[in-house]
Picture 1 (cartoon, one colour):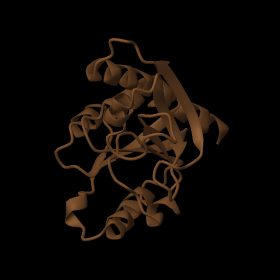
Picture 2 (spheres, rainbow, N blue to C red):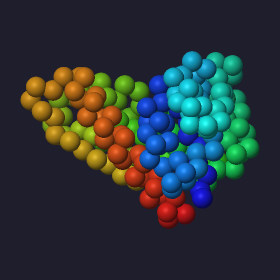
Picture 3 (cartoon, rainbow, N blue to C red):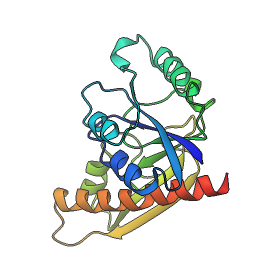
Length: 185
């Protein structure tokens, strides 16, 4: 069975979704790594019996130093794939050139790369919005797109309802993308 590492920074809802939909079914999540020692996802991973590593970015002077430590930590687990699911770090070529990884992004790339994509997409007034899964590359949110799913904004859309639609799509598209990749490998 293929081995996956999940990287996360926050509450871990996408991590929990991956655990539910793929762990021990299509792949093994051998470790969950966070840059945030206070991340809610730590408890979610531990509750599923998944080892958690904390690589706190505030303990490093540069992005490059952080990425070197992160790459070293990941290599100890020898994964087939690394899945960024709400990992809120801009990664340098030290990471991107060495680690085979995919990222979940809450917009229809190439639109709204980077942080606050949900808010920027909502505020844009675009009629069609959605979610992307892409290969991680040296360019921020610029790697080859693996999958996208869209929805049409309703006339009475609020940021809360818009965000709920994004989250629902994330919970569908990320596991499907991971399953497709591990089946191909």
